[in-house]
Length: 146
Image (cartoon, rainbow, N blue to C red; front, side, top):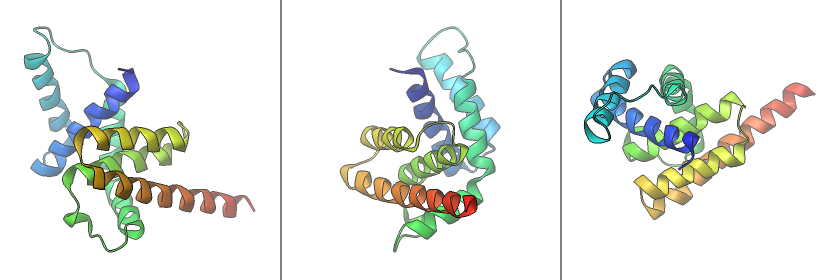
């Protein structure tokens, strides 16, 4: 498994815990490392800096990201979405906003996470929301360039 995909998968799991428990992102990250220590290895795992950046950035921008999700998901309130879907969207929208990775790759990674952790109905929903967010961002960038 590619390192960045593994980091995104880990970030989703940490965001899920953060969302459900309403704990601090730092505590959710620490708890995740504790589970790796007990489940995957008898040695303390090495820090996953990319995962931590994704989690902390997503949480720091959650209010703005949540507004984008609500604006682009027709007839869906954020609190009515499945927790996994909501956090896949948050993670991908945060990463889209960073501009470091091409949008098609981010969207494909989000869909892969949905295949692993959600259901078939979620795939088209997540794809539609991310496509709309990407188009809006591209349109806004084009407008500001003019």
